[in-house]
Length: 255
Image 1 (cartoon, rainbow, N blue to C red):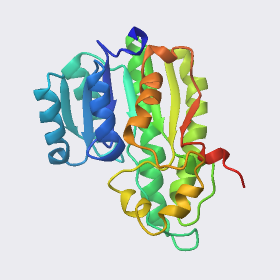
Image 2: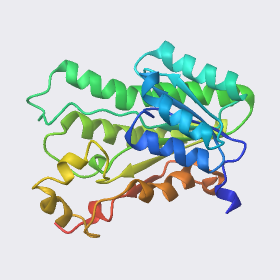
Image 3: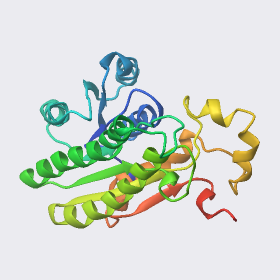
C-alpha cells in the first residue's frame, strides 16, 4: 500500500551492524527509503552497505558511538549532507550487562547500559527533533524497547529497567515533540531469534521459554516488518506515544 511506502524519505538506523538494526536497514531500503546505517565499527556494516547498494538501494554507512555526543551529532549532520534531510530515526542500539541481578551489577554496568539504551536514544532524538523543527519538516522516531519493560525477568536488571524507562521516554517525547511535527512511538519485541538470543532459545531451557508464549513459538525478524513499517511510515500519521508489542502474546500470558 502506498501509505506504507518510504519512497523519498531518509531513515537513520543505530546499532545497524547486527541483529534488529541490520535487518531493519534492509527492510527500510527495500521499501523505498534512503538509509544511513550507524555502528561503532564501520567495517561491521560495510558488507551490508555493499549488498544493499548492489541491489540498487541508496544507503550509507557511518561510524557512530551513540554514547558520544559529538559522534551522534556528526552522524546526523553527515546524513543530512549526504541525502539532503532526515525523516525517520530508528533508535535501535542496545546492550545488556550479562546475567546479573541488582546486587551483582556495579556503577560501570549501570552506566554502560543506560548510556546506550536510554541516554543515547534521548540525545539522538533531541538532535533529530531540533533539525526537523529548524527545517519545518516532519519526522518519525521509533524507539526499540522490549517486553522486559512490562514483564519481570531475573538477571537482566539494568537492561529491563532501561527499556521500561525508554517506554516512558517515548510517551513524554511524543507529548513534547508533537508541536514540532515529530511522532515518537516504540516497538517492543518479545523473544526473537537472533544470533545473540539463539544460543539461549535453542538451549535445553528452550521448552520452558516456549511454554510461556501463547503462540508457542519464538518470533522471527519478519514478524517485526509490518509493525516497524507502520511506525516509520505515514500509515501511522495519527499515532504517537504508542508502544507496539510483538511477542506472540507473551505479556498477556496466563499466570
